[in-house]
Image (cartoon, rainbow, N blue to C red; front, side, top):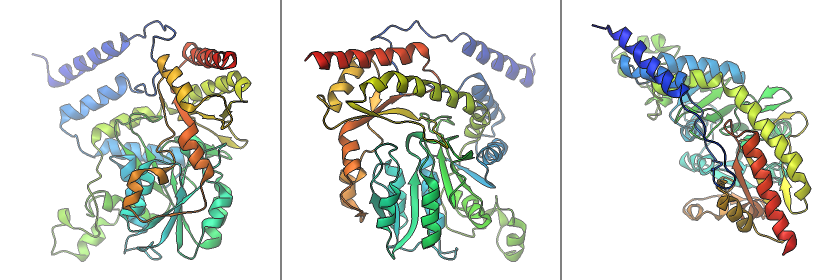
Length: 428
């Protein structure tokens, strides 16, 4: 009779055979979908997850810790704390900065500046933690915070800037850090779409007081669901570990000292702070261990696609605005964004409908101008100015997929679709 280890080896061999036999069908223009998302995992991740399931060690343990250490080293930060989603990472980051246990905390009614073009779970945690989001306009060439608008938005109530490296495009981080130092503000980097992006050779997520990443299914690397909070601040790192799981001491470096001070309480159930249940699973940690090693090749594929599209589509710049990688930065292209110029002889709907009919999946730029979302009627917030660029993005911008599964055939097809659409416009 085979032993359990023999059976496990056989199962892993079968999984490898399954992935080895997966092949892509021949691409047919206008018929084969070019998707926004294509799974980035393979045999290694599934085999690692199987190991967790067979061992019954499925909740956060050694594999999560290993991925945390690997990701901290990759970004260049001392502390990395994995959670169950990027949304939870943002909520945990804000919960640390508003926590009564820290000095100079953000208090109820204090303001946090953040871009108007963003995803909902950048703004909601600010509100969840009792602060007031201040929505600031973005630059059309980056979709990121306009530094001049940030400067004008600062008041005596401002306590933090929560920037977003949207679609993998690094913010103009240095002037933002200068403003933060000048006004004694916290900087939170929402890097959920920017794995591996850089400014002057330094990874985004390593500049702020706290940074966050997402490993959702659609992102550069995926742990199915998952997120990470990073910081160089020892106190914030320990608070993240405690607050991730109810506020207890089990994962703290000083748990022995704390337990000694409270010997009348069972150390397994000793709570030093408030908290959540944001634990990731061990399966997610196992996925991350293998995904991180694939990130740089994934980024290279996205950059090659984007460079090709820019070179081939710039002939249409009379009607569409394209993004470029800025000098001194590394753009990692979460998707490929297009803005239809206001004076173009067609609308966003016209070109999006055309592309979708050709089986090219598209989507708006995140939540668009979030000020226009109906949920904003439920919360207290402030806008800085009229947000003209954010309003334009809401109506005129979109992106299509850019990932490791898009190669020369697919990217060339997209260019042909654009050329066909533009030719039709010029004839009409």
